[in-house]
Image 1: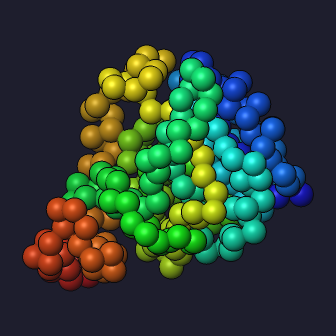
Image 2: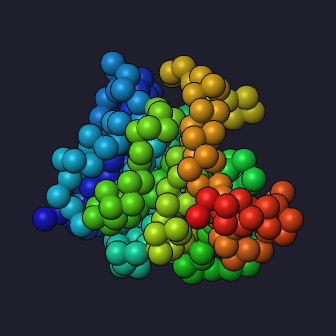
Amino acid sequence: MKELSILIPARNEKYLQQTIDDIQRHKEVDTEILVGRDEKPIGQRAMTNQLARQSTARYVMKLDAHCSFQQGFDRILIESMDDRTVMTPMLCRLDAKNWQIIPKPFTKKYYFDANLVFQYCKEDTEWGLIETMGLQGSCFIVSRKNYWKWNLCDEKYGSWGAQGSEVAIKTWLNGGRVVTNTDVFYGHLFRGQGQNVTEIPYERKSEDAKRAYDLLKNDYLYRIGGLVEKFNYPGDWTPEKVKQLCTYADSKK
């Protein structure tokens, strides 16, 4: 049995081979790479699930097709994993043209706002395994058992949008925890205006993302009051908003 399956859904990805080669250079345990080329689009969630069905590893990692890692990233993550945890490495930016990780700024913690859209927390002084309310979504590792048990990639939410929030919310509400491991980092290519790579190789419709967030809010918004309190009302959250959620949740019982 493999220790880790890395699941890479890809569509017209210019840096896919470099990502694969990077993983091969830096992995240190029995890690396999499963790639799904979504050229006749079925969507990121559906493709990730297809890849997960091929895995027999204890852990699976969903990964964007434009990322770079430090040496031994898989070993470091697995050494700190358990079956109730979703974990992500510390996030850095990737200069894809030169294939170099930009070490600063880096991100350790995330939250989702009152629309369940993920946001970056301010830099802090915590190190180690840091609990985080939300996820950015480009890289996370979880036991294969809980990937399916918690339905972390529900295809009803569509091709893309809200994935980091979906994974984080479902993990916390199922008694798990979401953490950043600051002993390991990765670089992720951010594309678009102001980045060193501006072209986006496939169409991303804003209405698709909106639909994903609307469905996620309908399913989970009224259930997350305790989670917002746990992380001390980040961003636009307030005690009044949580009270409203709790009142609505009571009416649903």
